[in-house]
Structure formats: C-alpha cells, structure tokens
Image 1 (cartoon, rainbow, N blue to C red):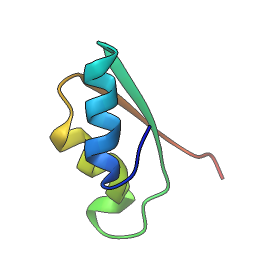
Image 2: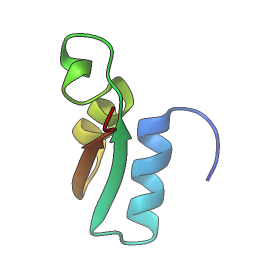
Image 3: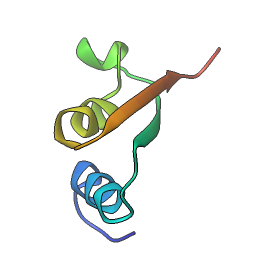
Image 4: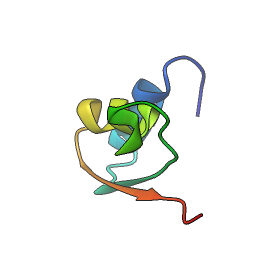
Length: 58
C-alpha cells in the first residue's frame, strides 16, 4: 500500500481501486476513540466511500 498517514494511504488506495466500502477494526482507548478508534475515526473523516467499523468482542 505505501507509507505515511494511515487515513491517507487507506483512503487513496480505496479510491484507486474504486472501492464501495472500507472495513476497519477498532479498539479505541480515548473518549471519541472508545466509539471508533483513532485510526478508524481519521479514515471515517477522510474517505470518499462508506466505512464499516467493527469493534473487537472481549
């Protein structure tokens, strides 16, 4: 995929392959991160397509 910002790398790759959906796992630690996760949240706000965020069952 590449290097650099996760949100940019994932989003740009999804755009390149004309993805309709990005699926991301989350294990958030902070306030907003508890809902989404920091990387998932960043991708959510940057991506051009729908995103499905799932949380790990503990």
